[in-house]
Length: 211
Image 1 (cartoon, rainbow, N blue to C red):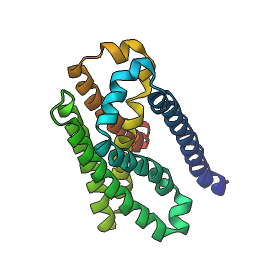
Image 2 (cartoon, rainbow, N blue to C red):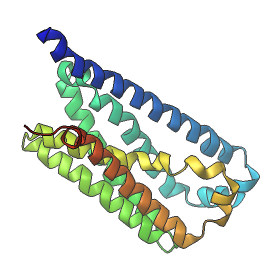
Image 3 (cartoon, rainbow, N blue to C red):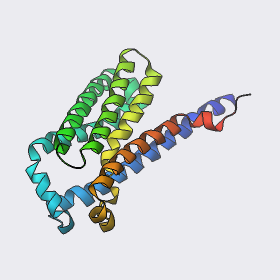
C-alpha cells in the first residue's frame, strides 16, 4: 500500500510529461508544415513575408539554427532518465542550449532593428536571456530544484517561437493584425507562457491546504 502511494504521483507526473511533450511536438509539426513549408512554396498570403525572409537570410539562418537547437535540446535535457544516466551529456547540451539562446536572442533583436516589431522582440529576447541566465547560474551553484524551475521558464519562452505562429493560417490574424498589435502579441505570448509554467510549478501549493 505504502509503495503504491509513493509510486502513484511519480507515475502520474510521468504520464503528464509524456502527454505534454506529445502535444508540444504536434504543435511544432503543425507550425512547421503550415508556416515553413508554405514559405518554400511561395504561399500567396506569405509572399511579402517570404521576400523579407530571403532578404534577411544572413541573420535569419543563424537565428533559425539557434532556435531549432534550443527546441531540440529542451526535451532531451528535461528527461529524468537521460539526466540520471548521462549527466555529462546533460551538462554539455545545457551549455549548447545557453549559447543557442544568446545567439538566437541577439540575431532576433538584430533582425527586428528599425522595424515596428522591435520593442516586442526586445522584450521577448530579454525574457529569454534572463530566464536562461538564471537557469545557468543556479545550475553552477548546484541549486538544482531552482535550476529546473528557471529552465522550465526559459523553455517556455523558447517555445513561443512555435506557439506564436499557430494562428498564422487564419487570414484575419495574418492580414489585419497591425504592427503595434503584433508587438504586443509577442510580449503577451511570452508573459503568458511564463505565467502558465509558474502555475504548473506551484500547482501543488494551489491545490493543497496545509494542516
